[in-house]
Length: 233
Length: 250
Image 1: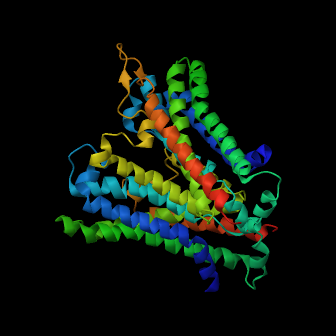
Image 2: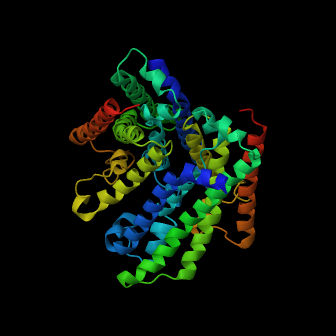
Image 3: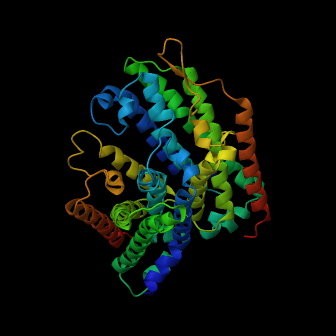
């Protein structure tokens, strides 16, 4: 429990900033929809499509992706720079437990961030005499959670591979960008799912695909744990 | 001091430079391939002229967004981070003023930013010649100026936030959110006429024009008043960062 608390203390500022930004922007997208429509599209579209373009597919999803990627950063390599790695490693727990606590905290934070717009959009829509189906919103929430966990795992792995200050963040963004390009390349597209399409609902999002993404995320986190357990601090 | 500032930022700089170079090279050298096959660019980019293709993919599209995002990480500096690393005392004990310590970081960052902004202007016309295409150097340099000045504002905002916020990742998250939020503020009806969106200005959004033969997509002449305002704003943010650092107790 204390390890979870430690992981929470390390990531809470990033998480809370993300929480405030996502909830604030979700509210702005819904409550000021007439003003924000011009930012999202120049076409006359329905409320449902506007929400999809602006939130579940568009700007808000991009923000969520970057926030989740940054949530994955930190860990023992950064602690080495701060001179606290020795203290953490002296705790009577295995490195795997340290990694697991950090991963679990990050996954819970990612899920909360993913569910936030899915809750706020249907809840706030009646205030402007519109409606958005709860079921559909939670479907997007689930897709964001699964996709977000894989993106978190990419950031998590980067934090283990690149020890330099902010190098992990830059590497994580470049890795994610490279992955996004690779998924669209001819030949590769059949074997690699585009996580962005899955998250916005335009790609495959059946149970098998979501399970495969979850397994890929778990494998990435496991790889990060394996590298950490072998490192010499 | 120069070497120190360079060593602190070189991995980030080289990673960003490599990524931008790879993207420019990919866009130019694989252009026929990209247009013929399913590609990581929207469907409408597969039509149109070469200059439009480069503009949509590099100067107003993916590369510009990536540049703006990664510049945030280049701007992270100051003495606050060193306090977390417990090296602030060592740095402050050097026989130089605080102004010189962070002044060097700012100058090195500005040079790196200029190099990054120039990268597409060097690579795209040069690589285009290899693939028997041509991209006008003046247009490429036009965007380099805009990328540099726009990048300076992002760099300065990131630098200021890294000076005033203590956590390692708080500054990049805050700067990224500020970058996103400013696009909404700029689009707000009472302000939309002033063209305050930094990213739109960097990409000459909605100001590009075709030449008479409809073969070349051209930007308008550089708006020096707008560039001066952007540069002034960047200087203002950097001055604030210096002032805060001078007053901070380490």
